[in-house]
Length: 64
Image (cartoon, rainbow, N blue to C red; front, side):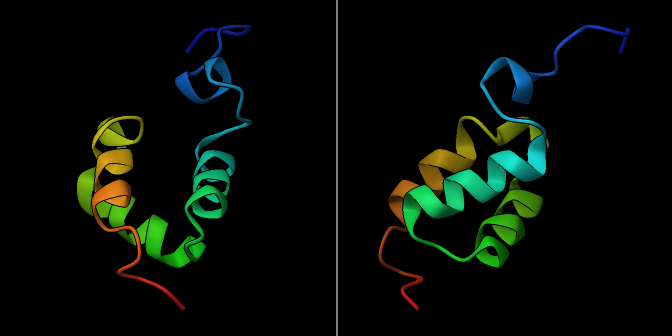
């Protein structure tokens, strides 16, 4: 990546992937651990699509 070029997380208002995952964990009321584990299974390319769909589908399954 060239200097000054934003990554997909920065383009969407986040510092980096960790910041993004922390934010969506809070948005869905899930632990960061659950979100990170699901994100790892799906892969980084699914962070803005498949991960969100999976979190919406699983809403309420991981209540703490």
